[in-house]
Length: 431
Ligand SMILES: [Ca+2]
Ligand SMILES: [Ca+2]
Image (cartoon, rainbow, N blue to C red; front, side):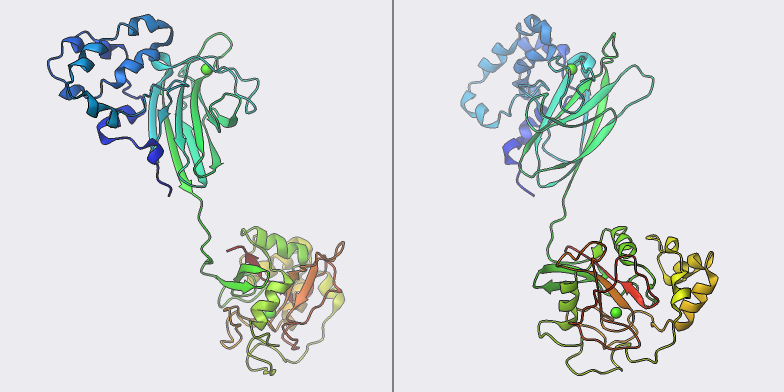
């Protein structure tokens, strides 16, 4: 978190740093101030003088400010300036400062607003906010996400809209809404939130309001991955890779029959993507460049490879409905059951020749980075780093249970809509 020293409020002056709510209005200008015998409890009055602007047009009355007397009484004048906070009244010149998050800001545009802005562009060029507004400002503590909501009670004849500006201008609007908004912020930058009163065509629906403002810093990548993924320091860059073939669950059987695009969609539904072929190769070969995850000598006991081939029927396999290859399936039984609703014979056939084992069954079938079942088990869709060609974006890696191919092997002859009884995938994402 960046320090917020820019707007740090001295403890002494917290009252002045607090958004209005109990914002003093005219009653704070009561005459007794002038005759005050002692200042202690009135430590904050220094802010009051500036409050003169709060009443806008009624400036004259505030100019009668009883401020002079109290200030001059202080023989210790010299010390005062060091703890005097920026004057804040919610005007454009003196916005209220938000220095901590979350913040609950209460205000009342009927009694303490300023009518300067009426339209905010480019957010809402045709919505009139002709009523009075209150302005808040803050420095974004970090890169992150700001959420602002305003209490909006239907039918109460009060309508306060909220606006986010990235500079102090009604033409610098980057977000607005009648009940709230969420927007990403740039750390260290100054922003403005304006609570403005909607004009319904004949009158301003001014009144009290409460803003709830929260800020959540963007998680900073520290090279770590979710618990079901591992970090692979691929030459093309660090990447998080699923430990297991999709659905990436220890003990679950891997999917098959998903085509390239369906595989990508499944990953994307989880905030991930298909792994690139070079990432997959590195996860398998490791820094030593092995042919297999366990070394250079083929050993069918280590991974699920070398099983007897079972005759497949391409027609039955092709009858499998693509519509069953949903991004929502969490496991193979769900996936197969979905397909069986329209193509039971196809599912029966695929099931009869399926020889994958539950993910993670082979303890030795793991690469240096900790990714399991790369070579063998099911063959895996990856995305070609080269980009591929129209309808050919995939590179099938690792072959399957009835063969053994090296980490470096590539199969690029199959197009994106190709699905097969021994082809699945795994997902990757940025750390
Ligand atoms: Ca306004
Ligand atoms: Ca595999």
